[in-house]
Image (cartoon, rainbow, N blue to C red; front, top):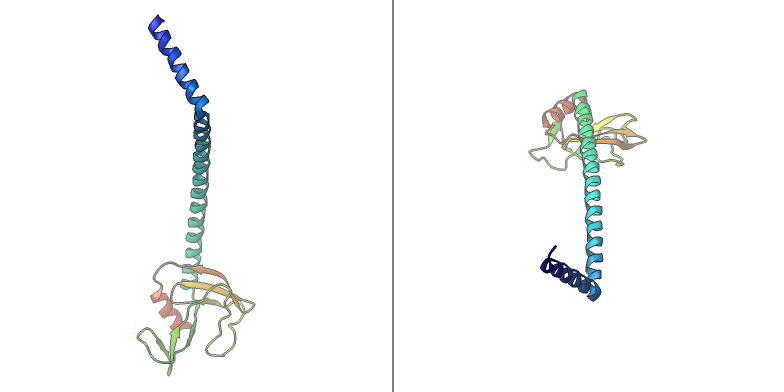
Length: 159
């Protein structure tokens, strides 16, 4: 190394030392902290991706269960309609309207005025299916697909 290169290196060390002594140390610490935060964010994002994939798989599994229940036959939840609408269905001389179901709900059978019997597979026109346990909807699944043909078939079969 010649004299000029040695002088440039020394000058570089002096500048770096001055930056550190004049508060640059905080900048270096801040940089290191930011790097740590970025790594933590990257790790969290990777964990969230795994959780999201797992949830999507679970939703897909539940959709298959719902579709299978529709295909096997389910009681479509209806109630008497106050007035006739195009989407309502006639059961005998009575006009019925489709009613949604949800987990934990206690639906009433329109024909008996009583809760549905234990073990009834109850469905709605939106694609939801559940099993009646203790008078409430449990084990709820959602098909996520158009089930209108299956609903019509099940209304004819079970009503």
